[in-house]
Image 1 (cartoon, one colour):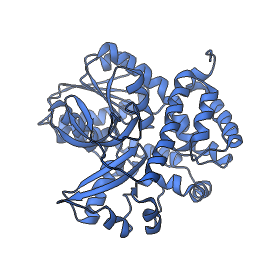
Image 2 (cartoon, rainbow, N blue to C red; image 1 turned 90 degrees about the vertical axis):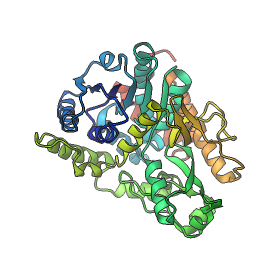
Image 3 (cartoon, one colour; image 1 turned 180 degrees about the vertical axis):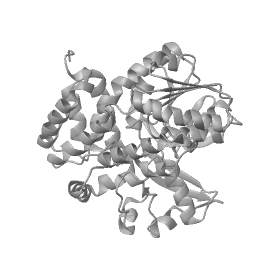
Image 4 (tube, rainbow, N blue to C red; image 1 turned 180 degrees about the horizontal axis):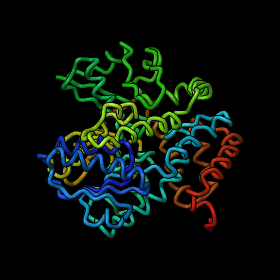
Length: 427
């Protein structure tokens, strides 16, 4: 088995290596390619990963490289965690919208929109190379915005891929613990960072409304400032919303909190990353340090490498992934990407159909944001300003044309270096 990690200089990478080590009995790893464009981070993080592999007595060749072609050639799995423009670009996504009274966030609203515009051309290039150099490989992507990237890749390339996020695994397990139902089937559905829990079944009974009436919230994530949903709000929604939905249902208070924060999350991540890189340079360190938990990537390794395991070993396991709808949600097109429970085997994901779903509010909210995502992919591929504005006027965190246009123009100029499709190309 050859595993390639693109964006291996990320301080998250030891999480992935830990997952490989934990499943070494199931994964016959022979080659591990760690690729990044940042020499310093690749060297620091890559050397720690090498020490971890050696300490685990895994006899695999570990290659640190900036060569994308060599990384992809004959790979079985490509794990992608890129951040185009790095953390400084994220900070711009967070800060510039605040000047226009809009939420600045990594994946939601106009900030997440620009992360998508920057990332799609780079992912498209990676996928075109995969089609030639490793046509049978699986791409497991957790670059954000994960759902929008899934939409683009599965509808515009021939690459086999699944999108991944650590919100589902934390949300589902947190809910099972609170309800003391360790073996329950939790129905999780929607879009990446816009998903709901719509059933909690155990021994023939659905405990969803018990949970709703108890005001049970979804698991909060370290990388977003959460306040939780009051019981009355959850009853109104009629399903348990995941943590990112706080940005939508409490837009004004979230905006105020972001405006008054001493630092943006991106700025905090820059500080955390510097601390982690310093820790990683300790040559005596040969396992994942506890400090990594502050970075917000909790359980990525479990989610990502267990997915690799399920595909490689044809396990028919249940995982929550970003994949094509293919009839699972009857109110969306088959070609729409969704985040949902699916059975995973060597053929990929078969989404589990949601039967007799009658929550109109949840349906309509998902349809609205799905429309925004579809426009976003078109805008990113075509480099079209009009299509970009059509997307933003649908996004519930933007909507206002004047605010959207002013912020769009400022962010577009700020990220000019990473938006080749919008500058110089015919529209």
